[in-house]
Length: 224
Length: 224
DNA sequence: GGGCGGGTCATCCGATCGGTTGATGCGCGG
DNA sequence: CCGCGCATCAACCGATCGGATGACCCGCCC
Image 1: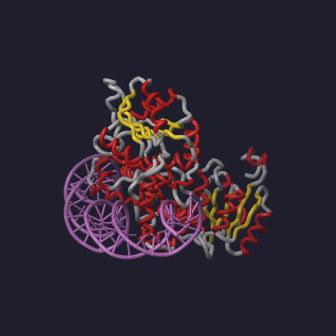
Image 2: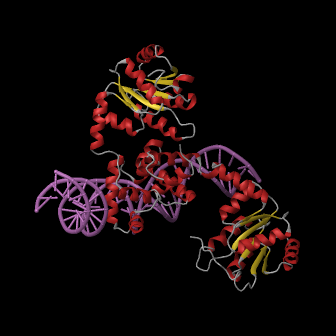
Image 3: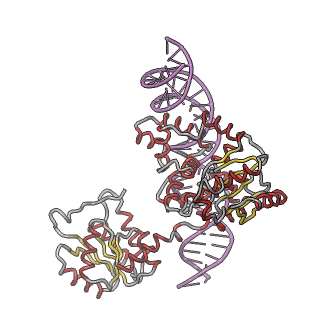
């Protein structure tokens, strides 16, 4: 999958510009050594904290950020991912975030994906899987470790961040700053119904206030 | 909620009722002479001070008040504009204030517009521009001198004096969906202060709920 | 036919919010 | 020096929100 198949992307082959973020210097060094053997992948920056990674992503404009979720002090990998991914909507199309971590708990996975991660790999993965995942991420394609993929599929079936049509209606009015009474009137339903829907929306978005819902909806582009 | 005040000007065209306010008698006389040549515009009162203009606006109920900003003693043109414009929300729909002054500094312009002026003209303007502006103002339409328009546009692009730095801090936390208590803790201030700031933010953004503030801020790109 | 998910509504209550008033301190500019 | 804008805080009150609970109706699918 290096040259013949995909063709054009490798032809020009300026290399995928990568930023590595992990709070352990040893791990970073190991990754650098490993990645140095990967053709077409160039590490342009190392970050030891989430804040550093966010700054580097903005400044260096890499194609991919390899992000650990456990970062010790400061913002965690999820928050860093969120901030970096948020910039991905802008003109230049920010970097894709590929999470590389040790654990595969449901909470970690869902939080990372919700935050906008493009892929989720486990450190136990084989090196060539990592290389392939980085190349996939550089093109915005999702890459998941096998165990992670399984959990994600399970989640797809269960409760995704999927809102029903009616809930989106409510959310739309909410984003206009309307109170429950006004939302009710706008949609020809009762305030009680509005509150019921809002409660479910909060659950699905993982927030507990209207301002939070508007922010979350904006961030995840659930609104026009 | 602005009254469109279709006004008696259009239909039967009985003429636009105008009050002129300028502290220089000579200028007033000149304006009167000039306006006497303008069809459809009738000067129903002259004020030599801000207080006088406010009183006349209430009593004579003109369609437009032509207001100088520099008024020597007493309240200045901005304050007079504020008081007259404040009455414009009431049932009858008060008079529109058209500022006619010599200077076009940022401070003057923004203060006049904030005070509720419908238009802002320079005395250097050509007479027919003045006539046109008065007719526009009578219908509540904004009329600006070219240099003034330029500055206003600049202000639109630069949201600088829009919100104070502290207010942007508050707004940032608000957009994360935090409650007043949490915002207070995040910024090391009291809830009371948070509420005070929020009140001012609502004013400036023209909203009255937190969700509305988040939406407005997002729309106007006041946030990251 | 009986679940099942989505939409609708009601009621209750504590917590929070929005608005107001009033007051203090601080830096800046006339 | 005094005024003004900004930030800070307090106390109060009515309105609204958030959360929980229970209920009904409808369309769909096994």
